[in-house]
Length: 425
Length: 66
Image 1 (cartoon, rainbow over the protein chains, first blue to last red):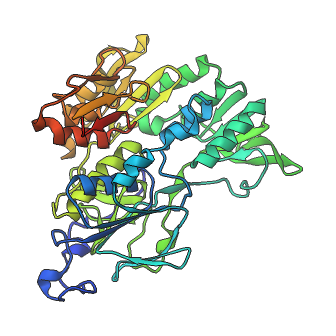
Image 2: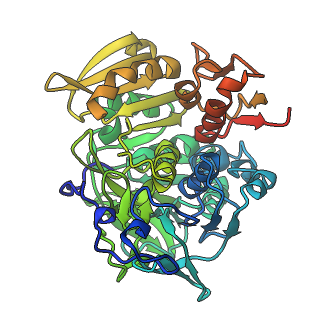
Image 3: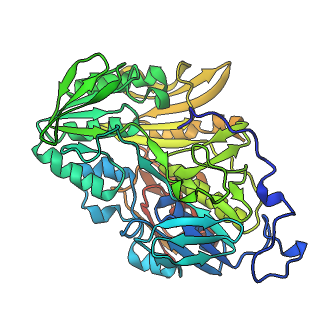
């Protein structure tokens, strides 16, 4: 999420260049060039999940009355992903409840919503997107919100009993598997892996969480708080195997039988979830001329090229407050960045400088994380008491607060967010 | 304008309070949304629409006609 190399500052985005040609149908004068601030009468949003839909909604909310197209690769109406590893996987929610907006609200957007039609190519200079049906859609502004896909272990795809979790289909397949599984191994100790282990262990299977870190989510929570998460998982019966990598999977007759660790040890399993991170969906942009490097490289305003924007999990933009590039894979960034991009399309010309924020729910713990905690940083308890499993704490690094973590104190954690704003703006 | 909130869907992110602090608050004990003004004055309508839009749990419903 944040460990990738920083991209050199690209504050002078391609949109600032006066040399790019004007779009078809305009006068071709300098005034007609569509950089930030130029009038836009049509917008194509590629990607119909949280970030894409939120961009479309924000455009309308901010007064955009032009032609709006929302293109989605998945066949479903836009749905929300955070519930997939929690309420949908546990069966607490009917899958329909994860739908982002009811059809009446989508209809009121007055947009063409084309679903089950993946984009296959982009001509950035012409702002033309080709789809898998061969259709070509052009617009004054193109917003790329194609998100990420799950990384897999080499050779593991297609093996019976092995799962990843990114889509609704993935969640329902895994849910079905867990109903009959006796021994589940979750490979990967990030946010998603920890959430899946927490949910799955409550459904019956004997659950083990394995990963290279000292404790689950150490990268996101810092080691001091991740230690509390490890304690919680252990108390609730999840077997933790920290500090060890996975070498591969064992199989018999096309079905998984175990997970082979780098130490040579084999953890027996009749079901395995692989949650070892994700890959930005950018293959379709090869040859487009956009800069790709762990996501779509954007300037401080989230502009990737003239009149081409990126938003959500797929966007690596230059965070001016931090002085480096950042790509965030979380739900709150999808809507916040969407609002920023919509405003910029309509001429706001503002850098996007959020305080990163995400939450996770595991067992009875609601954990909120503001900022980017320093992994090995020193922890200062601000409110409550870690021993009582209810606290807000801050991480400091070189005397500066880098992150605030709340544990079963969402309101109080939010109130301490203010202490981070200056560092990020 | 009439606002309704779904406490079961609310994830306690507090995004609504950051955008419209005169209309929304959170419970001290678990962070779940508290609706201070179900029928807010016109001056708050714009921020309420934004709060509903940025809510990561989609727990806020705004009826413009009411």
